[in-house]
Image (tube, rainbow, N blue to C red):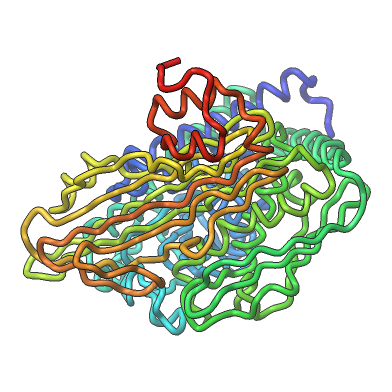
Length: 551
């Protein structure tokens, strides 16, 4: 590393780069058309050096976007070499195997030019509600049925936006105005990031980002190595079973910890299936790495060096390493479970220090008009997070994705839907010395007395709930039904008749520790707040000294 700055100045500059990313992400949330981006934060933003290595990311964003984007920028530049780029150019792709795992996520990369050469790149990813095909349904038999895939290409050449590209997007989208606006919002947010990056370089008289890149990578690599040494060296294995689609899915990991590095082999996981719940390996690796880093390196910023210490591999053709043209629309069903798979391995290395399993519930609700009125509404229902050593799990929290739900008010304004209720589901959190986070119950109907179509019933953990840890009980399994008597048991498409309602009850998080050791005051508080029933308080927690009095 050069001596251009002392350590304090380099750290200041590093933090300023993070601020650039945050402003980039905020610009995207302000400009986005889709509520899932604008309201729920389903996005990522980052700054990369001239070699396409990630230097910093916005705090706003999901692991599935950020960690895949760390690899996708370099992959895009391999196909569209930097030598052919000119000032003002921007690249785009939604290739699931280069980007964020399915065709709905678009990655936009914009070079930053200074003194006639590229000094870095700004990249962003967000969800586009519809790009054709079967939409959000997981019933496609191949990626060709799921929507239009665009290889890396120019979104803009100089100042001219690629209108032919946008015309193809809008011609294949059921919500063309929104799709066009969301893609252009990615372009706009990157431009904001470029301006802020160049202003920062001007302020510090930086000709390039080489010096700060070296500083960031050296500090991050050493910090990550030291943090990973906390886990005893050895090999640890874990298996999780999910509902799957037509049959249960097995996820298996063999984790090797040695010399400040972690290698994970996902061999032994189920083969890829003929439904859209498969994961490209890049997406699987993104969430697996997040699970490890969340426990062992939470203080180390996310960048190319901190991610490099964790390697995730799998033979091709598995549900976690699906190859083209496997269907991948609901790849989050598998991806959301991978952090718990990793934490189950690490619990063997660090007993008593690992949170219980979380619901992994990012239950997508893609509701559209099945009558005369055409509309599409995308929202998510969230489950409970596992209890942590020393404290209860968070309720209705999208761990590990980190996104929020679209507020009821925004969802009802954007589509003729009526949310009759949305509330905590009592007794869904696994019992324990520390209780698992609660799931929620949501009841939705139509405001216009017309039937609805539920095309994204990718609901997981309907068969069994998340496991507890250290003697804690599992969280409650999820449930989904339609008030006409239909029980939702798979990830197919369902018709909701006029006047009927969709009722969802998401899973809760697992509990941690022996329920008999839970403090009576905590049981009384949960009972007073309606988080547990009187029966649970009496039969599982053996009552409470304070009875039914409010604490």
